Image 1 (cartoon, rainbow, N blue to C red):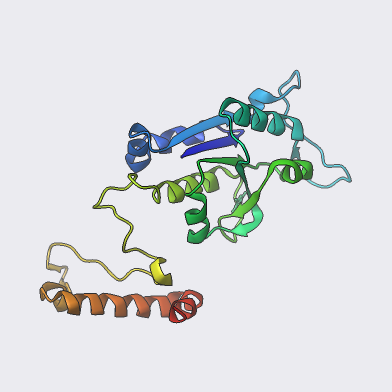
Image 2: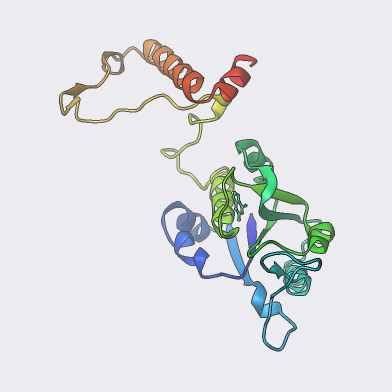
Length: 231
Ligand code: 6GU
């Protein structure tokens, strides 16, 4: 899978992609991450990429030409037809595990990071296929959301996680949050590991874990809990 990031701040992506699981996935050639500086595609002699909004109002907008030319460059150089183009914006549909699963099936994903007050609507109408927000709060730009999407999508691709890191049992599986985990030592600061986990009885352990998952989900995420009951 190839991720193509359109951004005004390309350096943000280097350090995250140079560590841990993302680094390994790139080395194993399971994913590719290509970063494009929108400013490099500005036709303006001062490499300008923003301008005032027609109709007035606060803030600046990203102008359409540099974004469109970056997009053209990406699809032309990689021979991409019908790409998913995700625009990261607080106005978008709220990102969920199901969206990650859906996007993990694509060969190429283009991520457009917004800045300033946003981008010219004609870019959205022309090239954007999905508008995504990562939650109900406002960030200064789409770069962190793009990293979050890449991370969450990449880990669903076969070979990216090792058996140990496997995603068989985790939060949002069956719409339940994860049960509590314990490791050594058996006692820490006077607090013991629940007896059932030391019992060796795997049936009892599974039952305990499921009950704990339901308890925590009901408490913290009644919305998810309702969904899980319907399954
Ligand atoms: Cl995708 N962008 C920005 N700027 N803020 C956000 C967001 C995206 N999602 C939540 N807040």
